[in-house]
Amino acid sequence: MGHKTIDELVRADEGLVSRSIFVDDDIFQQELRQVFSRAWLFVGHESLVPKPDDYFVSRMGTESVILTRDRQGLIQVMLNSCAHRGMKLCRYDHGNNRTFTCPYHGWSFSTDGKLVERPGELVGVPGHATHYKGELDKKQWGLKTVAQVVNYKGAVFATWDADAPPFEDYLGNMRLYLDAALDHRDGSPGGSEVIGGVQKWRVKCNWKFAPENFIGDLYHDISHRSVDIVGIGPGGGKGRRDASVSRSAICFPELGHGLLGRLPFYEEGPYAPQYARYPEVEAYFRQIHEQRERTLGSAMRVQTSVGTIFPNMSFHGRQPRTLAVFHPISATEMEMWRMYLVDKDAPEAVKEAMRHYFLRYSGPGGMTESDDMENWTGATEASMGAMSRELYFNYQMGVGHAQPVPEIPGCAVNGEYTEENARIYYRRWAQFMNGLSWEQLMAGAVRLEERAA
Ligand code: FES
Ligand code: FE
Image (cartoon, rainbow, N blue to C red; front, top):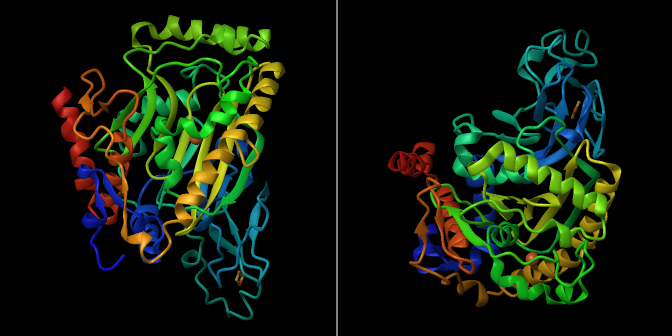
């Protein structure tokens, strides 16, 4: 990459982004510090830890973290690394543990608020009285915990940065669209759950290709032609969803989030043809839609298809609802995770139909995901050379044509096919990489809100 500055590498206004930010090791290390140590990151779903002492091992950037529900029922997130000499405490993907005991020298840590003042406190040290002569201050040697954690409609997000703004401010008006994925029944009881566990697999590509794709790359649909020809939608017809709806690329330029959705109003796609072969499923979603229409009326939200929360979480916002997270492993490798959400109290037939559709569509063996992976790995590999990494990718579609949406503060939209959303994503990335303060990072969002008021 030579010695280019971040602003030379990301020239978002011109629609130019250097290939080096997808392959360079120094940039990658800088990302871990400037992006992953500060931003709010998706860590998991509450349904992965339903009972006290349940834990699920997740990741934040390249770090392994423990997501656990303490005995008081609160979700805690801690670094999965012993304070003594760094050994991984949890070596399984999930389980149930009252205390976390290190396999190396046996230190143990607890999250039980009855025993400890703060989660992850050191409670047991073999030989504390003898080998340490009682002199080791256990209070000083707890596990590193995240600075802030939220359980937002069942989705757990956390940040290492105590100065980060509250999660809902970080989301801004993107919240409405994330809600569609997390809780499409708008707070009606029951909630959502992840079914079938978490699919995890590694892809030899830079992690940013995936959130960039999900933030609004409708243009790449040509990649999925074979899927469209085969027809994997639940109705059994051609196309992936058996229903083509026009979508707009909607983005939040000041926050770096974006989606493909339907403006101006929420209109659920025609469920009848979509789930025609599954009458029970069709009836279930129709009833939810009608209920939603009754409770929300004219406040019906925009229909979301796919979206991205900066930096590395994406989702499908309509049936089937999925959450995806793209963990950085190195500049040229990521670990992709996918979770499938269903209503906890949905009939078994609905869950089963969703499960089948998920498996055809997504995941390492899914028909669309494998198309995308092929593109991302190919683009990464072909940008690793000394010559190719000096080139720029083109993000010029629709430059200068974004329009604000008065009804949605802080929002811009640019028709169906545009690269506006990718541009706002990389502009946000550059702001983080340049080390802007949270005040600076959020100032634009506040300004837009005020303007709309
Ligand atoms: Fe954990 Fe020593 S590394 S007890
Ligand atoms: Fe795709």
